[in-house]
Image (tube, rainbow, N blue to C red; front, top):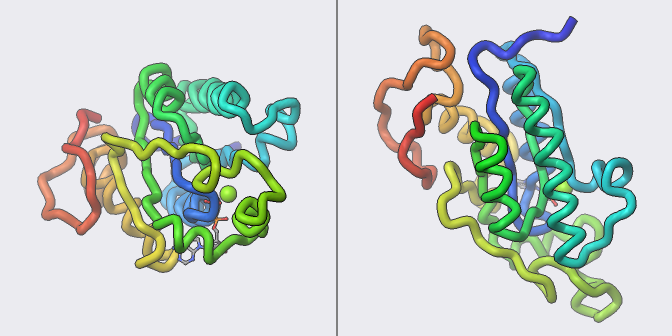
Length: 206
Ligand SMILES: Nc1ncnc2c1ncn2[C@@H]1O[C@H](COP(=O)(O)OP(=O)(O)O)[C@@H](O)[C@H]1O
Ligand SMILES: [Mg+2]
């Protein structure tokens, strides 16, 4: 049997440019949460495109449909006490806001890694191919990315190791009351804490 998430679940939605570090952070934070007894499920955009979204392309309608499918699965997971960790470019504000209102308990994490850093990482060589005109519709090059205006957490992975980014995110989730802190009952509002150098919206009620 899998572990049950202590306290109400929520959706952790990681958005950002290609190579911003979404998949890496999703995996790292999943390990930290599982170590603490939380039940998580990774929903990685690239993986979902091999299955549930295999029929979709990269035009706006397809990208919105892709996000809507991930949103639907996330909503079911949250309802069943599992924390979905979504790693999805999700370039359109409208998609993310729809996910927020549909899912309810929603933590938007914007990976604000600068385009120049994302481009220098270029793990799949897509930026290079996009610059060379060999691929079209590359987010950040010739396709839009709408920067979140009210993300709960903003993290720049160019100034932190993956492990440090995950620890920072976990601390922020505790600070905002999404996760219980040490010695705290699950689902209770957090005690006020000093800022951690992570840009974030005011704490939301748990
Ligand atoms: N915090 C970080 N510090 C240094 N390198 C990172 C960090 N996060 C990700 N990376 C590196 O950046 C590259 C792209 O990361 P990835 O997680 O695949 O991005 P995304 O899923 O957003 O496309 C990988 O080579 C990864 O090792
Ligand atoms: Mg990825």
